[in-house]
Image (cartoon, rainbow, N blue to C red; front, side, top):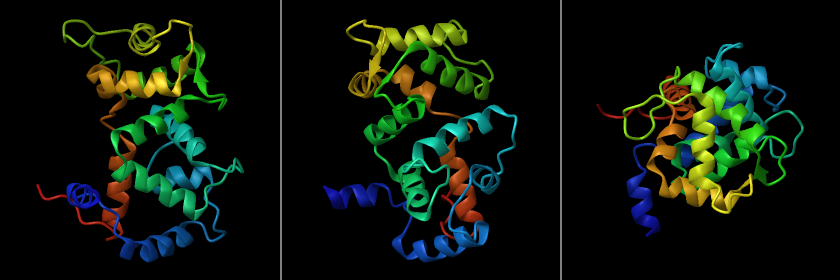
Length: 201
């Protein structure tokens, strides 16, 4: 099974032989060995003041595992690995971490609303109701997520509720799948530095 998964992901796989080159590139970008948020955004061409920039803030925070406001090389490789190779469940768990701004293990409506607004802006307000007949407002998106995911209707979403709810809901998976997404930024960055071959078209 592990072998099949490797074959399945070979198009996007970050080869172990590339780690040394990736490290050289990382050190060139941040000689101190600590990647700061503004450097992280610059590496992927993300401008401040944009919805993408706000989303990158959340990504950076989620991968800053020791909470020192920097990303070291191990955290950086973990981020790239998950974005390129993670299974759906892993990506959903990571998405939950991005949403859970106070790291208390559940999402309330305020936390959900903040990240929904960012994704909504990135999607330029084009979020359908699932049938394709109606465009939803950001508030309606937030309420719909609670309907889909908050199974015990207690006004909070736990990690398990989020993962299981999103696995059941193609609509939620599509909402979380951004047209401008970290995977694309990472792939472009690695291809530019010859650390990964672009996909065949």
